[in-house]
Image (cartoon, rainbow, N blue to C red; front, side, top):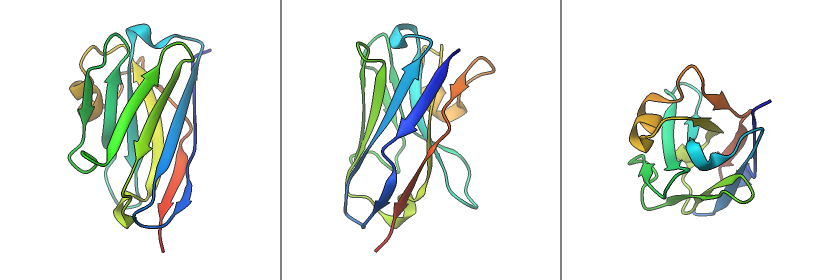
Length: 128
């Protein structure tokens, strides 16, 4: 069974940092694109950052560009999202997803296709 499990969320003060982890099982990252998405109350789902499992091609949303970094380790089947200089507007449930897309931009903008897989999400709250 294909599975993605997020961890690392929590409460952090503005300006702080968090590192989210996405552990994949049941498949390897080599032929997949993996992305981090977020959903906040009253807002549309947003593709935050996506990375190719074949190479290091990445795509970042403007909202997190320069503050967020996505990385992967195919040996451990893990994808991370490093978030620095966090703002209250970053508060959301963060999900990782994987699909066989070859375009990281398409993954972040359109989301996974019908054959894609989603994790359960992890809550990130940025507040004083």
